[in-house]
Length: 298
Ligand code: FDA
Image (cartoon, rainbow, N blue to C red; front, side, top):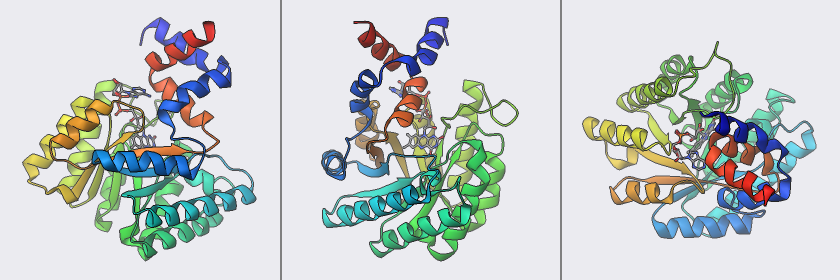
């Protein structure tokens, strides 16, 4: 990364929120369930599926975790009522993981039960390394009662991920594999771009060749190609995997994936609490952050 890119990346927290908010429009469906529904309908018309994330994380008060459960239940009801091709994604810290793991599990179970009633599905997002063990434990426990209705995320940048896959394979797990977005120390995470890519490919291959369902979550064309190559070589039918992308990033790649006959799911965040999510997106792409900084200067 160039010196200028680093400057842009670390300068973003000083940009006033209203300006960052303008950039948010690309990455976030809006403030309400209605906004998410509109975005999902458009994606479904395009041939893509959705996974909806209610924005919010690091909840410290049980009442806020309970409110998040209520919002996710309303969301599941609405997805079913509107007959949308969409599931949901949840950050455990929004359901109180940092307050009490048992409470978080209860909250998550309520949501998964509702999803299972609709034959829908809940993806447990993966947050920073302080949450990895507890998130995998949550997945294992909820998988016992609702194996077909829950999945988890693993991050290719973590040294431990291949071992985590080995441990989870007996469950025939449903895993989203992604590079990983949090800033992690070198003791636990690969830092080099090519090594993370290689580990992503290794993890994807290990999962797919062992019978796991895999969400291949990336906008990196090299990894999309590598994923297509693996499923072709293994002769997998399209119900065994899906590609996944974030809302607002590279719609042309979305069309390329779909037109090659693969299934694609788009991650659709909505809600008032968009700032931390957007900050991560901007840090990951200095070009977009650059536009935000220029807008501020203007
Ligand atoms: P990379 O970052 O190399 O990007 C490839 C190309 O995509 C770039 O060259 C650029 O063109 C484009 N691009 C990437 N980011 C962009 C941006 N913000 N704006 C504009 N263009 C951009 N992480 C995590 O830790 N836990 C999780 O639960 C999830 N969940 C998740 C779900 C889904 C559906 C996706 C796609 C990703 C995640 N992630 C995640 C994020 C993931 O770990 C990773 O940070 C991003 O996907 C970026 O990595 P890429 O593989 O896209 O490659």
